[in-house]
Image (cartoon, rainbow, N blue to C red; front, top):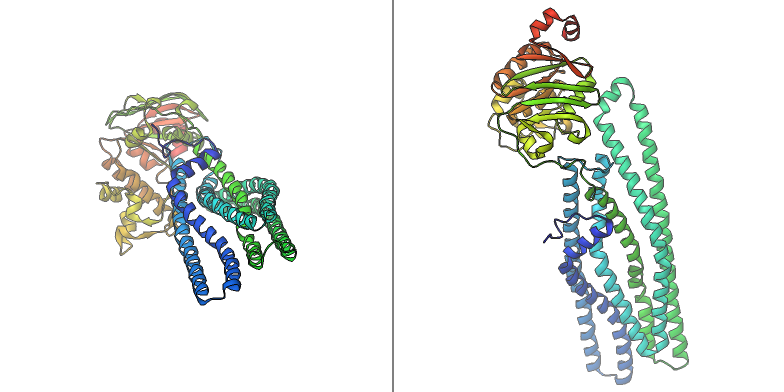
Length: 566
């Protein structure tokens, strides 16, 4: 039987039901304790009324002492029940929010993308703000029930004094909730739209940060900033709209609660004037009329929080319920195998066909950069196998038959713009801490020069995106990480575009030595890497047009000579 933890919620209400079901124990205890708190709060004016009535009648020190002891018990109950009740509920709330954050983040980090049409910044907003607001339902339900307890106790107590007072509280509460439920729907829809616009603004920021350097390079940063300002302004205006709706809701709730409290007080005064209730009951009614405003306020706010939680849950469902772009296979490629591309058509690739045998070092010289990017995307499985024509085989098996995890263990495609993470040089080279070839990878990528510059060596701190490293240092660090993975098949896409010619020559020779006996493909126009390869495949207009060693191609192919000569 599938547990709630492993089921995939399909809708926002599914997510809310899962959260409630998973925290039923904490919510039950929280409801009991918060119910005690509200009952104690309600009992306070009732006790005062009884004390006034009995003191006026008995006028004894014993009755006064007993009354003081009763008030002490009520105050202690109120204090302890609030303290422990809120502790239980807030712990459950925080834990549940953490669970949803992890689930949303896991969906965003899965190797098989989902059909969400959301950018990374939007997923980040959903994993943080929406997860927190969804988890608030854990507190909302117990507080709603406990507020209902307070209103019910007050209605019963007033009804025992005079049935009209009790009915006034019940009818007034129903009327208030009916009016506010209409406003709460507007809050839910407005909040949903606000979260969407904030998420779009967050996605725009992420895009700007990742592309800030090239934007500065061709002067496009001002246009990009104007684009962000427009998106941010839309988010701000929507936030103002939500604030206005919230303000109207809060003001209406407060006014309606005040009207009900005033009505109860005025009715009690008239009944006391007519002699229908005594002085103690009047004191109780006036005290309850003042006290009941707080649980009524809390009670009237709950529909708003329920609608906000539902709106956030529906946004989380956009990620959690999204189907995968493709359904991967379950097979694992044979160890030590080669790579074969057979009749692939995708983007600029036109019936691309080539084969790299196990242990071979092959370079692909693309005449068009777009074709190189398309080929790297196909090999990296950024493009699902069913989204292009043709077949890619790893270790003799088609990609469509293989599990993503199996492909990742045997085939690594290192992009030219590999991400650098905040941490150290060592954690960027070997994130899992399991590689046995870190020293060799550092030497082959010529990162040893960078390591030697710092007293901390490989423990030198790296800022987010490698902000404290040069472009060439970041590229060498990314190459070292790819080499340290030591996979059966390694594909490198332009690994040396940011390094000087001398360093490039050394890297080419050392990579060839380190990868000897392992299948290696380098997509590059670098003469040094082309010369280090066993053979070169020329990729022109989406097909392989020539094949030979680098030096033979230089001697016999004028187009090749013009394309790669520097």
